[in-house]
Image 1: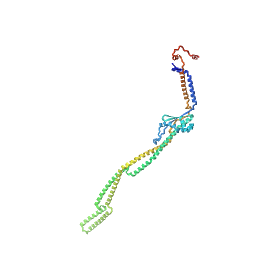
Image 2: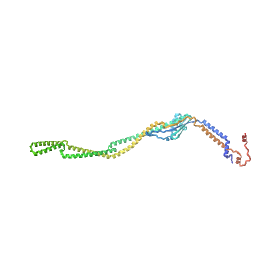
Image 3: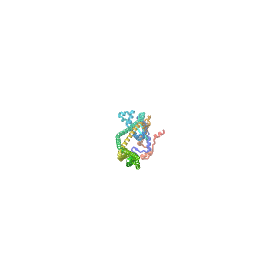
Image 4: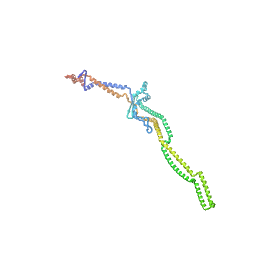
Length: 455
């Protein structure tokens, strides 16, 4: 059926119409290829260079020091693109290679950095590597910049890590200076308390108990000696002056002389020479006894020695008892002193523990600073350096011409399809019957096609 000048075509008729108009498709395709070639020829060439870098995080010997800058490989890779594209890193590269001079003159370093970011691509590869790709008009310059950027980034990262370690050490030092007076105050307080209550401290409690046991034993021994001395004193009191050894000996001689005189007087007269001689002997013995007794009473004797011993033993026993009382007072006051000491030690231990922790962290931070400076080469390792490329990255001739070909074919076929869909001519008896609704009596053949085929 016909609607105005349009007609609906079957797929076979549409393909046939496109084939008849293949020159249009070829012309459009050829035009697209020419435009693609002109684009490839007119577009400035950009060469790309890529560097593959592996991140090997620094490993400080934890048995000696704990790092104050802790960062995992995944954390570093998550921020590597932003850090590589940061102003400090790119500005150093721009100044070193004198890049984007016109952009710097027009908009300053920020404009040059923005321009460089447009030519720089950073991709994370795997678990601990990334690829830096830089584009430039000069292939050698692109390779140099791509190889230099990891070094600049490593230097920047190491400076940041060193600064972080230095800040940590400074913070620990400042905190130590704040807490040191408190530690010294508690140490002075503890020293003064121990000096004042040194004999009542819990650590000398056992020693005080042992001293009491020792003094108790000594007191018991002294009292036993005192009782023995008092018994000897009583016995000496009964003997009187004869308690002296010399006096006793002379008393025995005197008594023997008295007995001998008494015996002789019973047998002889008083003026008998034997009786006279015995009386003289007795008088001499009596005189010697009296002299010895008087000397013993006025001078050193056994009774006085025993009295002196008793007085000394009493004094010793009393001193032992007084010392035991002193040790008992110490023991009784030990719990209260221990409670006060425990309170002071509790506060002191808390401050000292914090001080020791800060001091340890300060030492570790200082050691970490030294390790950060010594292990510069272990942060970034270039696995595959960049090389100058012979083929430009942009524009890519193969890609550009392929896209032109595909686009030309698409536009050419679309033009042919459009032209075929606008064709209202009748082609064949079947098309006439369908469009006119009348029977076909005869059909005139195409003489030009016959002539072309015969020729």
